Length: 251
Image (tube, rainbow, N blue to C red):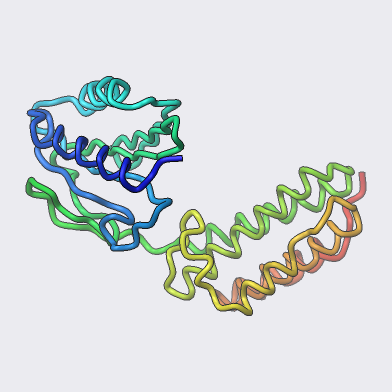
């Protein structure tokens, strides 16, 4: 397990490299280090502005080679969003390092917490609001698949689909309370009665009767959440969700 001291030392080396890399025009801390919420479990999250005339993919490759020399990298994961490469490193001591390689004109704050170390970022943008209608749709889609999986005695699939319903409810509830809905970051800040209802709706086993109970409870919570976001949509969904909640599919 890494320590805050080893994390701090490696972060300082990363920043020092950024300052001396001609392919990097700017850098910023994001995440917990930029919001004052860092604790002993936090990762390293560094955004890099790629200099004009340099290829972000090549800069990422150079940094990956360098980091593999500096630390014991177990694996990497690439995520691409809005034209920016986010490369996630897992070190052998379980430390996570997130390095993002932003094209020069795209480098900017896109969320709360963006501490500029050097360089000149572009005007910040804000994350778009949660697409509630999309998550409502995903909620009833997961519920449909939970029903059919249970009818087919696919108990693990049923449990996974019910988890999908729950995740959509959580996203919608977090957005309603002005909390970060992504990746469960703020779910623990939901009111206790909301969390109690979610906990009660979760299946406690793979017993078919318990999964049936969980399905009914989750669909009830989903419809209640839809009602808080869009009463008209909730009216349209009331009948099909009541069927999903109460009737097992045949075959």
